Amino acid sequence: MANRASGAAALMLLLLVLASTSSAQLSTGFYSSSCPGVYTAVKSVVKAAIAKEKRMGASIVRLFFHDCFVQGCDASLLLDDTASFQGEKMATPNNGSVRGFEVIDAIKSAVEKVCPGVVSCADILAIAARDSVVTLGGPNWNVKVGRRDSTTASFSGANNNIPPPTSGLGNLTSLFAAQGLSQKDMVALSGAHTIGLSRCTNFRAHIYNETNIDGAFARTRQSGCPSTSGTGDNNLAPLDLQTPTVFENNYYKNLISKKGLLHSDQELFNGGATDAQVQSYVSSQSTFFADFVTGMINMGDITPLTGSNGEIRKNCRRIN
Image (tube, rainbow, N blue to C red; front, side, top):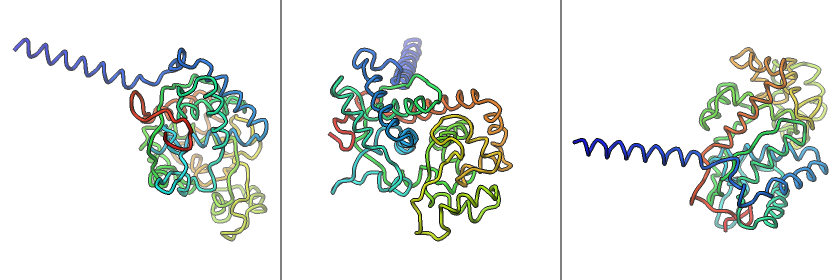
């Protein structure tokens, strides 16, 4: 009996060790021996791309977000469609909207020159998102790495998991919760909208049909976004009215002034449960930065492929 009990205890200990090992497979030092030059290679391409077009920083952060919300952070979004493979690029939240794939290709090429066959596209995307935020004036953090790339994608997951700009607070909260992210993470990560642009089709209903919006702001946005669907759908407007190429807390200041561009933006400050958190970020940019970093790390932890799962793609656009 004692032997059986001690054997069961040993088995439990082994399972606990294995569980902790699997959850700890992402680490900030994963490439310290195998590819220490990865960070310099990624940063140089990201900085050059943003110098060429400031909007690209926001686009790369968005790529990371849209990747992680579908099958976890596995670079599934980067896969091109083929005659026999349906990827995620043509799903509604991505089609004609996500961009920056050529920058990821350039980063992959630069990294392959330093250490071929070592660094995954999923990790490249995570590092590039961090470097984009830093380059535009935002906080820095140590990126956990060790992800591998998927050999699959999910068109339906892209359509169903990524919060649309029409989302209410409840839907935003539940879609983030489905990925293991808290409402606090959701509000902090939404602050990525302090950089970048959005298409008229994403904010048309908010500026024409809704009342929780500053009138003068709505009229300004209407001048570049016709009310008729199909007309000017791809016309762009800044998500942050003042500084769409600087990462700071103006996004939240705009929400308090009812100048959120998207319906989903303004929902964060609309008499609901997240109003106080928005106000805390207006009062303290450092609080926003700290919570944003926590949110990005948490998002980067969503169901990564590690160990012998997945692969290290040679080309981020197709499986090996």
